[in-house]
Image (cartoon, rainbow, N blue to C red; front, side, top):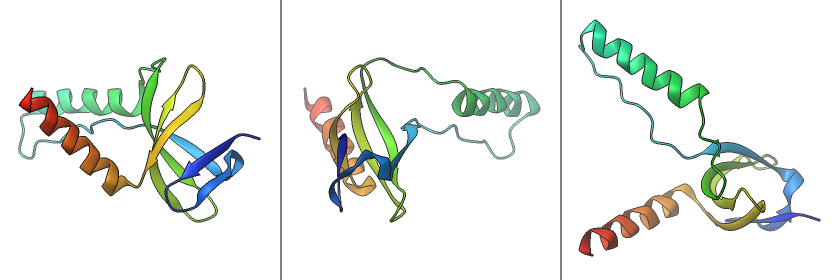
Length: 106
């Protein structure tokens, strides 16, 4: 039986979860932008919504625990399907900020 160790629920059967895709930075719409800038922005949104990299390797993804409605982040190796780590969204943001801070010190 395949399981996921969810942040609040502990180890649960994978059938209780749905993967909603990789975490990606959303494009920003510029208010009052020219029509050319809006068109570029539309292209960025189309890329964000419909074209994915489908990376083989370690990916951070949004996951949903369907019985409770809990959204969380999982780091998964797409080559092996192994879930390496899970976080609540706020803990993931803190972890990312600490990683960036440590990288800037190097």
